[in-house]
Image (cartoon, rainbow, N blue to C red):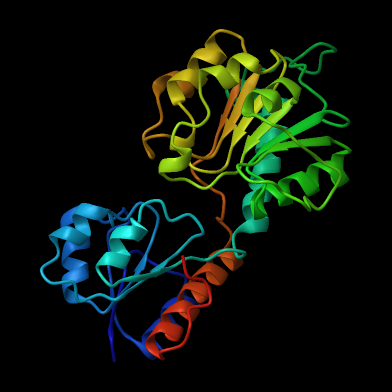
Length: 318
């Protein structure tokens, strides 16, 4: 059996299937692999089932002497923590798990849209603190999203799923920005020429882009200045797509009404400025946190590992 390292605890069904086909080592630490750990993994294992944040960057591949590993199956659709060009140079194939995460992440996106627009986190804090005095006609007035305009940044699988829910579920008009033309968005929707155009048009802006060098801090001060003061901003993609300082400034300055975040620029660190704001809903990267979804992700990663092990084409190469 080939040696497989699984970088964090997986659902039981995934572990059982992995152990039936590979000589499995599982890390016990519930944190991303450091560069030294990742270097050692490349030197001592035939394959790695990697998770979010594991340090497989160019210096990691360069530091392995030699690289024994020839396959990294990423547990997740986003793989910006893996330098795929460096992996290819080292003879390491990489896969991910698209599709398995789409609906669950879209659901979190819609949840954050509603939480931010209707000031749900602020209301919960009021109740939990024992400061709620009862119903009042003007208490915590938020924005009703029905009939408003949704702006989607990144019209891929997840962006389309969020737009579908918001258009057909809440009657929202949809505009979107994508780095390439989207001929079939799947619903009535207008593609905007620029991020600024989208920001100006949207009552709710949601980011659903992949992470990586091309999208690093793509959303910044110019975007927030173009947004309407009653608008809300949501990010369910990757934290470093957004200039977090610019977002904080926009919230402080009243350029936008609120935000809903599931990801952060220096995750798991969350700036105190965001923690202290009542008009920001904060989640601990819950995008795919559902038992059946995590099992599906693990099984898809194993499908790729088994294909590699048997000399077949990978179902989900990147």
